[in-house]
Length: 69
Image (tube, rainbow, N blue to C red; front, side, top):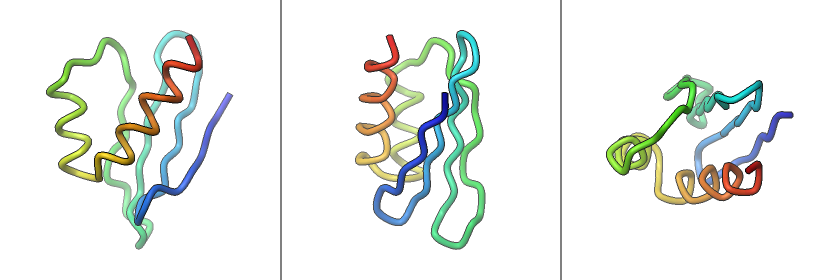
């Protein structure tokens, strides 16, 4: 399953394949900002994603991850 959405000036894709979803984020110019497999995450991981993008992106991705459980 794949979820794609726009959050502010960022485009986000969360691709679920097996146990480790893949998070990919592009800015409004189409430049890839983040492409990571998400395993066990720490608060520092989410802080870095928020620093690169926005807290809205983090909140929406975390919500999708919780719904996938």
